[in-house]
Length: 248
Ligand code: IPE
Ligand code: IPE
Ligand code: MG
Image 1 (cartoon, rainbow, N blue to C red):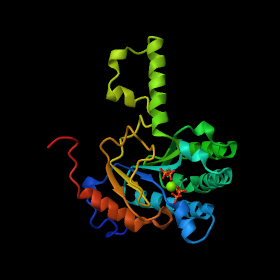
Image 2 (image 1 turned 30 degrees about the vertical axis):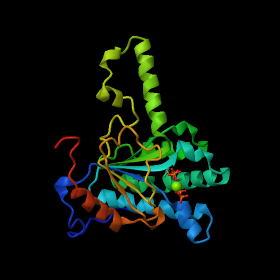
Image 3 (image 1 turned 120 degrees about the vertical axis):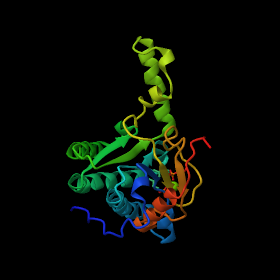
Image 4 (image 1 turned 60 degrees about the horizontal axis):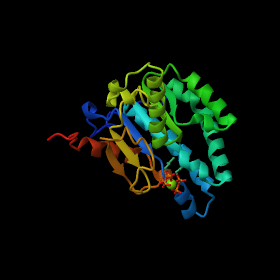
């Protein structure tokens, strides 16, 4: 299904010349949403997937070229096995169900994280979806899966050290730009805006390097209650901010 063209007032209040290029989201609060309704946590994750679908479409309609979603952290493996399994089956189902729609809408899927840790069923769905959507040029949807910022930075340091050891790289060329080329995100801009739902005032190991100068927006809304209207309101708030990057 092709996403509806935005109506003329869809972007009302949005300044097309100051759209963020890259929005990153910590999708938090699925468990609390379920608990409030005396449901199993997995029901919160199920509803959360539907919100993912809405926000991907909203982002595409708003013409924001990069959306990165924190779907599963390296630390989330410590959760009860039944919850981890439930999340993994939702993920595999999402990928299988959505790959055609992503393609139709010009959206290329990618992932960041230690994806080799994922179960075989998810890996297969993932490979299919990555392959199926690889020609998308209008938007890049990045899923952070088994992702941890510290692991990413340590991995980059390890690979650079390896290249130095074999003489491929001279130690004195290692500056910030060089280092970034060894990160998962080497081919995308740093996020302009990072949204976290459900009120927690922390980063939880998300994009530690890349968030250095990102604008932060934390909303109390739980992820399953989040939606397009609030997303656009946050983009408008972002556009009213003055970014100084350490200047005056
Ligand atoms: C976020 O919701 C989804 C994942 C971490 C996979 P949570 O499951 O963390 O929900 P809360 O924080 O317990 O409410
Ligand atoms: C961050 O949420 C990870 C994801 C949203 C995938 P968590 O719920 O795992 O983070 P903490 O435990 O509140 O820091
Ligand atoms: Mg949480």
